[in-house]
Image (cartoon, rainbow, N blue to C red; front, side):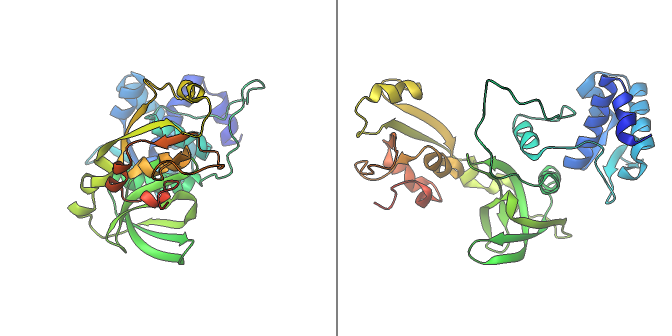
Length: 293
């Protein structure tokens, strides 16, 4: 009998627990019995049986470190469950660690936007393990300007900029915090280099600085109340609290006119930035529509 057939014949609750073990190994690199107890409110004896069942299915996927009582992911790891990248990323952004993530049947009445970019789940898993364990990675990355390069990178957060998924972290090549597009990695491996304090998430000032972005209807709109209703504005304004590192992506995603006097016309801008001075506080203002005007 195939492994998938064995799993499908298990009770749903047990499949959920095995999926949780599989997920933690794949995306975090380790798991303990207490993790299973905390998530599913089961006893240690039941958790022991679950780990035994998992090992029966994929013994080469994990190894127990008796000194820490943690099960660790092995280099030979092959996931027992299929993870759809978009679903996993959206689930992770909501604190996912809750077991299996299935592809649901699409609705015939409710339709989402077409996704053109789908990150590779193995790349996302490698990035998540590095983030979770605070590790330096050696990565292969293809950029538009310089092609493929090999560099050391210390990731600390996965971010959806509205169009695609980025990973933010410390780029050892340029000695600063940068955003990298998840679909452009060709390889990610753990580096033996020790992480330094200035490379950690706590040192990323732009990521931790919270700023206010004040949006108003674009002055070219004939009936601004429609825009006020779209964005649930109060007194004709929408105040967004966001990380400085993400502000430019938000302004670009919503086509917010950031030119002096809101001078963009005929390009679909329905919003304008009221507090233009905030652009001086973000690291990538050139992404904002109209910034150079």
